Image (cartoon, rainbow, N blue to C red; front, side):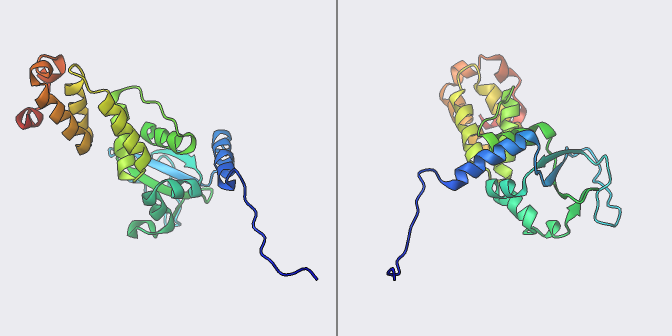
Length: 210
């Protein structure tokens, strides 16, 4: 009889990496999506529940994703999905019975960008403001890698000509770390930054802080 022994198998590529590729492919194809992300921009009234736990139609733009992917990517979304927040313990379902979570005061483009980052590790923004709004959402949902990438990229773009515009965008989005860094740059290079068109239209709180 063979002596009892432990057998250990090791793979050069982690099986979870295969899962990541599979989820990326399923997201692109729209396969096995099991959660609805309902987006409200702050100007819409909250959807009225019909009393059955189902959402009324027309209650803001809706995006689809995989629950387990969202849960891994964001501790905040994980709590929303698992009932870790008081308001999420009453589970919402759409008409087909699919789980629904709601993100308030964001636009669908930001959430689409976030999902693109989560699934592919790449996202494209078409303006500095759009990029920082994405960073703001990542910060709120604790998607730290995306927030750090946004900060790193924005700060790499700070020059005499762009500093005031970046400072204004950071103030608008509430990204204090970028705002502080841009303010420090503006003070250090004040003679140059003050001559740019963007400096002339800075809001009063920013001018006062400088």
